[in-house]
Amino acid sequence: MSSTAGYSYNGRETGPSKSRSWFKRLFIAEYCDAYEIKERFGTWQRPTEEEFKEDHLREHMHHHMYDVRSTRAEDLKDFGEGVLLYFLILRSLFFLFLFLSILQGFFSIIVN
Image (cartoon, rainbow, N blue to C red):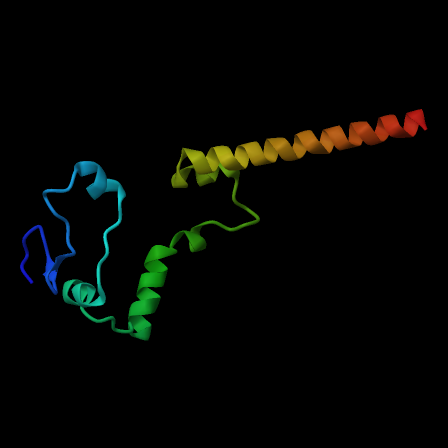
């Protein structure tokens, strides 16, 4: 197989083609057969225990930095504004529904 834009396997074109429109190249997935995938990426090899632990610690480093009981919502700003806003809204809705349920219970006791 060549490294040009179009790949051919058994006479049919399987890779990206310049003749296709940009819309089709962007939004329509193309079929890649197993031989092409094996040629591009090689065969998968199981990581060693040390490599796995190193990757796991690198990807999940924040697990050691934030304790569930002592972390404030404002500390989660490190993960982005969306995470911070999510937990602030979650806390606000908790207190709102708690207040409304107590208010509703109070009125139902008075009425009955």
